[in-house]
Image 1 (cartoon, rainbow, N blue to C red):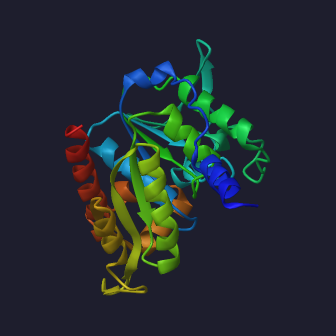
Image 2 (tube, rainbow, N blue to C red; image 1 turned 135 degrees about the horizontal axis):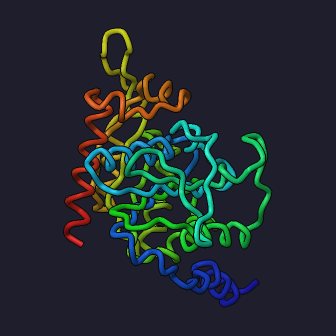
Image 3 (tube, rainbow, N blue to C red; image 1 turned 30 degrees about the vertical axis):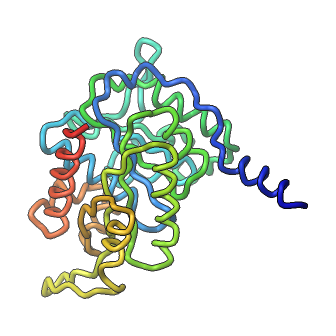
Length: 280
């Protein structure tokens, strides 16, 4: 293949598909925060769930949209996996996690929690459109979206269906994770998403006995990437056994351990997001 052909193929790869129609329901949602990561296993869903709860604690009306179609975990993490959304006036009503927090996830529609979702791209895009346009979210201050890892169908669908959304990127300090997170940053920029910042998750280990923090990976790497790309660094969340236990028990960490080091980091992240979105 000659150089000209290579240029053509490269152009095809860089071109995004035509943007779908924006659902009217978004007009009633003030701010959309899309939580994304370059790779799996970085604790993105934990960050998304606790971010939504931290926003809720401040009195905001919050929707939590789990679009990790193949690996939905948030209903289990929040202790509402046994709930079922109902339909009213031809709209799907989200499950109430608390008085001011609503949740929709494909997990609610599966026969059981072990059922796999074996879908190609168009089917995933279709259900995401339904989760945005056919769900009665009502008036929301924030809609927090938990994306699957990477920059595939789900990420592209959300970015195109939700113009004006903000990207919050999660990474661990490992170099292999940072290789992927750079792709997420560039994805957000290419799709014209404002990046509210990047969070360093699993940043050191907090001993449950003495409270001492031990760095398991080299520290400062995520902050360096934030500086490299000139995006805000939102903070470091350590590996805390209580975060793991809370997720497994379905008892949200931020509601039980607000005064812990990790709890305070989540509060600081929320304050930074408030300031960022206020600037428009």
